[in-house]
Length: 188
Ligand code: SF4
Ligand SMILES: [Zn+2]
Image 1 (tube, rainbow, N blue to C red):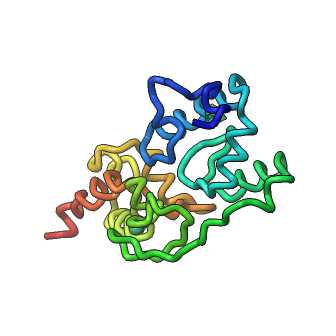
Image 2: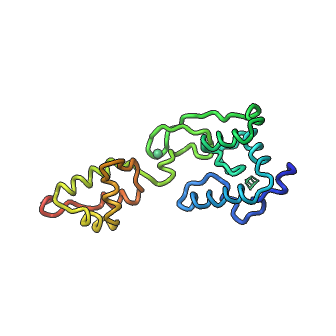
C-alpha cells in the first residue's frame, strides 16, 4: 500500500461508496459530503489526486475532485501542473445506450451501457409535453392534469415552461402523465 493511503481521510469510512461515481437520488449529496471530507480533513489529498491523474481514474472522487467530470480533472491538473505530463489519458469512446438507443461518449467503463439520462431514470420530455398539450387542447386545466397524474401542478407547468423547458423528465412522472386519459366528452 502506498504510504499516503494510510493517512487517507476516506480510509475505513463507513460508506466508501460515497467516493464512487453513482447514479441515484442520494448520490449528489453523498458526493458533496465526500468532497468535503477530502478538502477539509484529508492530509494526503494531493498525493491522492496525483495517483488519480497518473492512473487515469475516472469513476471515483479523488483529491476532492470528481474524476469523471472533465472540468474537475482540469482543476486537479491546475493544482498539480508537474503531474500532467505523466498522466494517462483515458480514451473517450462512443457507446449506444442499451435502453434508449442514444449515442453518448464517456471515458468511464463502469457506466457504458446506458446514457446518463437513462441511468438517472429520465426520459425525453418532448413526448410528455405533446400529451399535455393534447390534454390542454381537450379542455383540461393544468391543475386537473396534475391531479389526474398524481403530481404537483408546478411539475406539469415546469414541463410546459415557455423558456428553457426541460429536456428530460423522470420516467415515473412521464408514466403518470401518459396514464391521464382524455376527458370523456372528447374521447366519446
Ligand atoms: S483526498 Fe479524498 S479520496 Fe483521496 S485519500 Fe483523501 S479523503 Fe480519500
Ligand atoms: Zn438512454
